[in-house]
Amino acid sequence: MKKKIREIENNFNIVLIVEHFDESLVLLKDLLAFCWEIIDVAYFTVNARIENEVEELSQETKGNLTAWNEGDMMLYNHFNKTL
Image 1 (cartoon, rainbow, N blue to C red):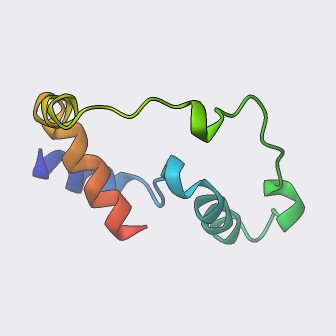
Image 2: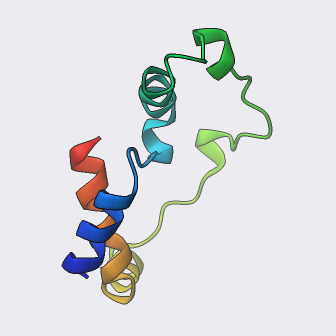
């Protein structure tokens, strides 16, 4: 998995993280500075979930999902740190 993460890192200039979408768009805009302005990354939020209506997962479920998706978690954690 570490080899694949390095491969992805070498093949892509930027990896966007949804939890940091605004920051990711700003970095993408800077990367494409020769053709993009800030207005090009402006957006409206539509169909967003309402925070107080989201059910919290149990610790057991979170643990199971983390174990089952270990590779995905490694990929996410790596690029979340480097963003």
